[in-house]
Amino acid sequence: MKMNTKLLHGYPVICKDTGASSIPKFQASTFHQPDAFHHEGYNYTRFGNPTITAVEECIKILEDTEYGLAFSSGMAAINAVLFLLSKGDHLLLAKNIYGGTFQTIQEFLVRFGIEYTMVDEADLSAWENAIQPNTKMIYLESPSNPLLTITDLKAVTNMAKQRDILVACDNTFMTPLGQETLPLGIDLVIHSGTKFINGHSDVIAGLVATNNESLHKRLKIHQKALGAVLSVEDGWLLLRGVKTMGLRMERSIENAQQIAEFLQTKKQVKQVYYPGLPTHPGYEIHQKQAKNNGAVLSFELESQAQVESLLKNCKVPIVAVSLGGVESILSLPWLMSHAAISEEERLKMGVTPTLVRLSCGIEDIEDLITDLDQAIQ
Ligand SMILES: Cc1ncc(COP(=O)(O)O)c(C=O)c1O
Image (cartoon, rainbow, N blue to C red; front, side):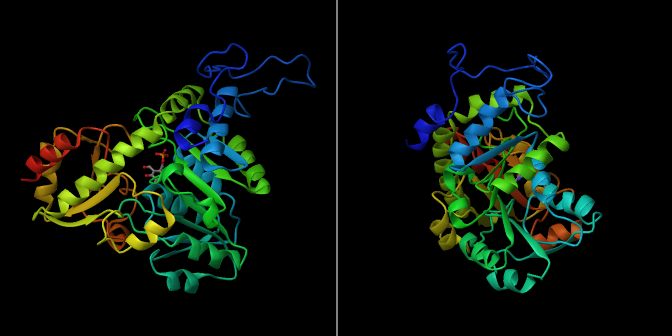
């Protein structure tokens, strides 16, 4: 089955009890049992729910893995993975990661006695040199949020495998359709389902997929014990949204490429970051490991006044914190996705007050370009 067919037929999409063409919202916290010793598959929604099972089957199919888990948010999924670490362990991570991930490392992991080192993800020798005898996990995003830096996933996973280090990858920007990370050696793939997978800016969700049974069992306990389960309503909406992901992504990616090329021609734009541009330093590696270039790009303007004017004068994209919706979304990582990181750390990452991120939606490209053009002028 090819992907667009899989998205519609590859996992439970029909209710087996009634034939309903969408899996119902099993809006129940608990399930009647015939007696105290037996139940019919479900007993309490924090431990499992049929609507959420369908979501978990869906991520398994999309990632082509043995196991999939759904969480209440991308951050809940990330925390469940990071909590695999124990006191005394060392975490090695890319310096360009989502701000919330950085915050959880500083707020929890450090307090729990876990050391971490951040490296320039594009520099293989930096990864190699930072590995310590107690390094237990490598964590990365490629392309990263918000600078779209690229990590050579195969080279980093090869390095990790030689030393028995787990590798976790946040694949939110690429989606399972755009980049298959497990065949590259990644052990755990994470998605903020809030973004392209649901695609309609109306759900908060997180997903993790793996082929490793023992990791899956531990994560299932984290899901249950941390209470970070996906709500039934959000699970149902995600199941509806995911059906059109193939078509949505196709259009959004086409728009992103054209907008990136257009922005490169504007004198007010100092730099465009998009892995679909041959000028991107990670272009060749990204083309080798991904199937497309994704629908998110960032660009650097010259002054804060220009940024303010752009955000005020753009009429088509919404100005918001998120990404991955059917509508284009403009955001300022400095004040939004990366605000939880200290000013010094943000600047070290390259996240400046004049960096704008654009998540491309499915609008008509002529309208997007005309609008961006007038707002940039
Ligand atoms: C790359 C990336 N990972 C994870 C997250 C967190 O996801 P959520 O907001 O669903 O918790 C985000 C949110 O913006 C993100 O951009």
